[in-house]
Amino acid sequence: MGIISDLSIMFPKKNDPSRHQKLFSDFKNLLIKLNMRNNIGLKVYKDPLYNGIAGNEKYILISDSLVRLYDQNPAAVRCMMAHELTHVKYRDFGLYKAMIGFGVAFGVNYCRAINLLMEIRAEVEAYRINQFTSEEFKVIHNTFKQHNTNSKKIKSYEVGYPDRDSTVELCIKHKKFSSALIDELLMDFCMNMNVENSEKLIKNVKKKFIIAS
Ligand SMILES: [Zn+2]
Image 1: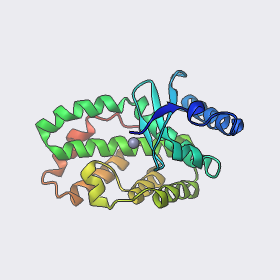
Image 2 (image 1 turned 180 degrees about the vertical axis):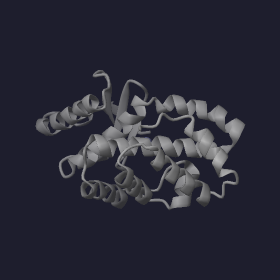
Image 3 (image 1 turned 90 degrees about the vertical axis):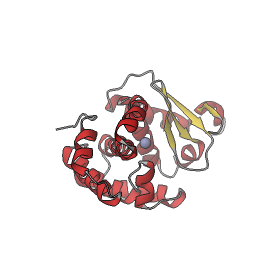
């Protein structure tokens, strides 16, 4: 990871004070919408990709490239921040640690499937909390897709990520982290990854998640 810094240090105020104040107030609004504590921080790190990282329970990070995108496309920045904050809200880093033991017991596809659900939950929450229209959401993902490298479905599944097109489709279709969304994603995963006992995997993976009714 590149240099980590506060927004005001990496982008000194004399350049453009209003821009970063707006970005920061968007961040604070997302905390309110997600019912999260107000003392979570926002840090910036150097990365040529439009990216974000859920650091720990205290802060999230967004790339300096994403900060620069704010002028043209503030919605894309709000989308990424809401995604990372959702990881913090659900303490996904804790689940990630637990997953290592889980993987030893059940195999690598269980880890991939759990990671998939953490990622899709973060994204569907970003979509829901920001109240994007489906068109806005597609534009945001096209912006990310054009700038960042976009891997194919099976390659994505191998590292535990849904591919971008499926992500957009699932979020728009289901609108929240529902049982139907989870089933659809996991069934597609099992099919693409040739999982033998898919029913068992789906049942065990679903136990790890609280599902919105
Ligand atoms: Zn994520």
